[in-house]
Image (cartoon, rainbow, N blue to C red; front, side, top):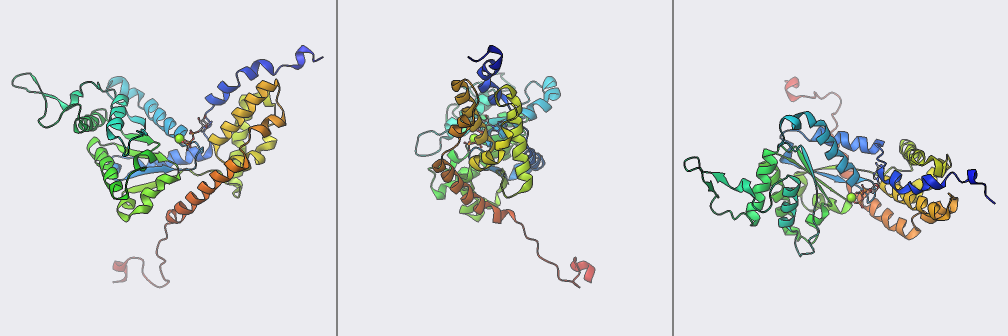
Length: 346
Ligand SMILES: Nc1ncnc2c1ncn2[C@@H]1O[C@H](COP(=O)(O)OP(=O)(O)OP(=O)(O)O)[C@@H](O)[C@H]1O
Ligand SMILES: [Mg+2]
């Protein structure tokens, strides 16, 4: 018979899902991507669109939500004096189920985030100073697409929104004919310009086709690679192990100090993606909960299958191969004896 004191795991195990779900590790890759994005978002930067691309389960959505939350937190003093300020917005590009991307749904979601009254997009209206009556600009129907769009542009401007994160941005380009992709991107760019907000599109490697389809599109985009932790880079192995350690430390009564010894196996199985790692550990903890205690078998059962892993790895390798050469920017070599500046030679 198991003595009562030998079952300390039971109570904390019940809180398993919450502890893992609540955990937000500010790991190395997240810090790198956030620093890069913060550098690239500046007044006037909206001339080009930022693309945050990375493997499925690397933690892109979590990163995007974190960025918006931080922007709002750090603008709290300004927001206290200017209640209308919304420094950053997160929206998910809708999968409309229609043939083409639904800009109507997208604008409606943006307006909801920007706190606009959807029944009457009042920013499409104005007050006639002579009569004091409300007037509607001619040709813009408030419920029409143009009305919604104008409302979004004005809201972005009036709310002084520095950047807009569009998650699942591949929905915008999916089902879109190649010839129309430029139009889709132009629509976003002009929204950015008129609203004076930086657009940040987030998605998996399929979003990269925006860059590879034409030079026209490539010129208007800057790619930030949210890469997995690779097993062939010692610094990545250390950073990934540190994440496993963090997951271990939120449930000390469940794993004790037993989890970190499986860091290499977890790295291999999750392909170095922290979101995927979180999913595996969540399942492992749930299985342990059902078993009443933690075992290695629970961890094994929680791993991705070979088929799943192979499928994701194929996508990652293809994506990395597409992105990496273009991220290598070669400067022309200067031959010895040649002056760097032609004016200096004169
Ligand atoms: N930094 C982190 N710390 C702790 N947990 C995380 C972190 N990043 C992601 N997760 C967990 O992993 C889950 C999946 O991550 P997320 O949805 O951000 O991945 P993704 O890259 O957007 O995936 P997809 O390509 O499927 O959209 C999240 O719901 C979250 O619980
Ligand atoms: Mg996501």
